[in-house]
Image (cartoon, rainbow, N blue to C red; front, side):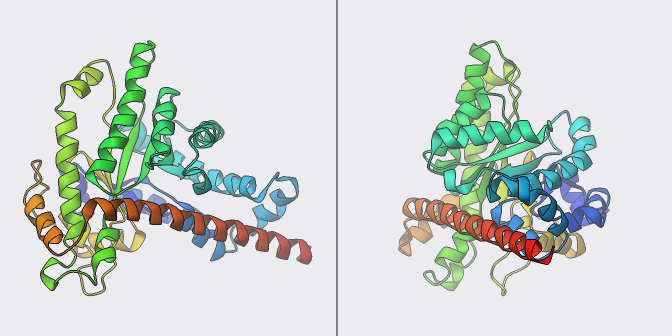
Length: 361
């Protein structure tokens, strides 16, 4: 058994943080499922921007659909849903085998809506309906404005991948929004078993402080924040409030590690995967990280449910002048802005391709 299989056997789900039509057409995604224990997939505007920009595979569909599309954004979602429904079908056996715990794919609402609660909810419901797949998550950012939309989407029966979480506090706020939606379904006599994951971004912490801390603290902040969040995850699952919901049939909103590709060229390329091994969690990995872990990965100690040494490590960062709470807010804001930029680039790319195809026809 290779290292990815061992990690899956430990109880952690391995998802691919990538989607392209070439990945589907070539059979590569199916091979990752069969050989590398991949059981789900995530996407975001940056991933689709690169996929469409760097391939001609989408050109024919753009040529066919552009004339009738109401907008470029509408055209993009048609392209994205084509890819993600195909991926969802590949993961459907996993979804059925695990009774909906695993086997999910994710599509993000327009990042332009990150600070618009009502429009986010409307978009989430529309996209999930159009996708018409039981294992399709709609990604909603865990921004202050996104939290009411998360609660409302869960109440409406829309499975949600909460994205852009960076700290324990942001995770807890998202988990409580999810739980409120579940509790409302229970009160209304509806089935509370609505799937969800909460995605905590890890490596961006270390990039943000790389030039501000001593060498002894290099590449340690993201893992310490993850440890602290993992403790909060277990604290929530052991709470009377959660157990009442579970007793009524609610599903656990699993904790998902995102941004787990190593950014520091001097560090191990499997740094975050090895450090964040933990049962009943998800790690969504860039393709290069997945292949690296399969090739030379190893599993050390699993995350401690009590947070391990995270508070001591975080205290060292505070002593070095790092304000964790302020940085968490900054990272979430910057993450939202980065997705907006990628979204604008993506729409411009599709516009340019449409124009080129029209001229050539």
